Image (cartoon, rainbow over the protein chains, first blue to last red):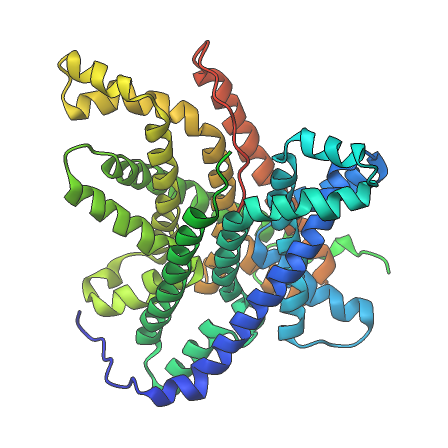
Length: 222
Length: 240
């Protein structure tokens, strides 16, 4: 491998540049996951409610979000949020709102599959016990759906973590930007990309391995 | 707030209107996505097949490593490596045009996902298919070419459709390496004219239209390659 010089790597780089970016990427991933699952479940319930006035907007939202590139959605929110609230907003806050809104569409598809996979008998048993729709959902269907879809939800979270690198488009300071900044300062722009790839790989591969172990342990035998 | 669509008829300083530039950018998006799709299919089918070979644990592990490598690194970082790092590490690659580097980067990223689907498709076939081919005296290559892969393709066509639409969406990361595609167009024109909403709306519409077209083409092919009587239960595809 000619011309690549890795001698500039020291622990200093990590504490000064990369750590800040890593913290933001992790923060963005966690907030977007929680927010995405909450709103995604809401969207899934709207689509499965059977009432057209709820189902149609939810369907349009989910299908719309899923047919545009994430970079475009990031750009859209970065443009529109300041426009709508009348003042400028940081790239980081814009990224958080964007990712919650975007991932909600994907999580809603996962939760919808999860809810639909619960046997009808469960719902009917709940109704036979006199439960309302919301008690049924809250106490019987959603806990089971969530547990069934946990591996898929976690896999989507890992994908989310990778997608946070796209906030590069609006200059937010995430893990990738941390590496790029370090690279620019030390004049080693190319080497840092390889370092970034290594860090992402280790994190994502490690998390996927954990998800696989989890899947083996929580699978429900019917 | 009125939308001023006539911004598209203004000249961009290079002798063409923004509208012409947009269609040019759309052409680049489709070229990048289309070429990357070809690369992804060829490499992906190869890797997926290698994963399922009965007598070669070495090849199987290699294909597994390939899939894990390309799945666990974000696509943007992969594009950067193809475009900036490899030409520096291997000077011979400096001759390669940027377009080709991006196509290879996107293609290899998607090939890992297609490899997984091909593997799932082949493993979904009854084992009897493979044994019947062996009993007929087919070599491994022949059994894949004439028996296993044709049926596996019918099984995986729906997830392959999603993957193709994802590829079209992922082509937008080429903005970061100055490929003159739609997302780069949107960012530049927004900066030049400050008419962000109109430009973003038009670009979004083009992306949605392209994704829809890909979906329809794949659906058309699905109807044409259908094997009468071979019905596959569809699964829900999650993730992007």
